[in-house]
Length: 51
Image 1 (cartoon, rainbow, N blue to C red):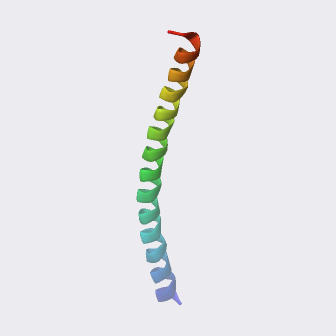
Image 2 (image 1 turned 30 degrees about the vertical axis):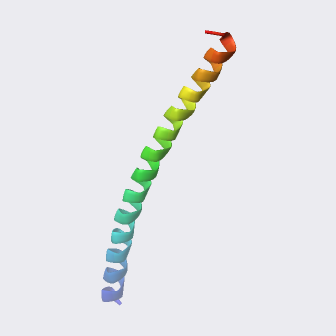
């Protein structure tokens, strides 16, 4: 039973590390998308203002 728990704990640790890398890439991609969205909103506001 203890060997099974150890194997499960090691598997969970490996999965957490893998998920962490995916989450970090997703976070960076969403931050870049947010910047593009803000630039787009700024461009629309400038176009509407006629600047």
